[in-house]
Length: 205
Image 1 (tube, rainbow, N blue to C red):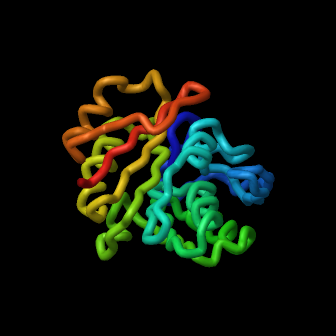
Image 2 (image 1 turned 120 degrees about the vertical axis):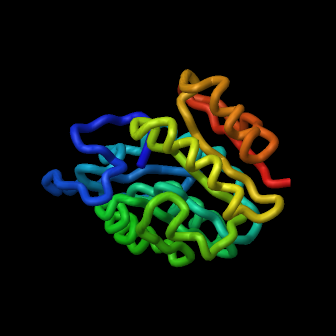
């Protein structure tokens, strides 16, 4: 469920039909070594893509509380967030059943015991929860209408003082996305830039 890579089968597909082709790679993220199992029909199966890497390295996490990795794919963002602080509880969600299975495998592989994975569309799997932070590398190839739903739906599951942090290619919707952030949160800031990407941040005040 990610923003830049393309395939004959959509990463936002709930039940991928492509033949399962297993991959495994390692990556150093926030100074630690991680291992990820991946496969066909999930985003960036051979490496951590530049946008996800920027989000992982620059995300601002609370000292404690509940974090949502929305559209987790095989789990890199949520797993790294979980590894930073055992006081954090991470919920990872994706609509793609293959991605969810891989994320659960990778939780065990990286001993991320303070994280769980839920299957479902957008915020439906977490309607019972309130988060202190939401992290997202959106599936832009699925359309900006979907991305807009992800942004506008965030305040319903964010606590006061909570933040929504989303990485996006710098050249995509330069004025549109800040406008959507302001509609959702009343504010929008740029948390970081790098490698042709930027991280937009909205806060519940």
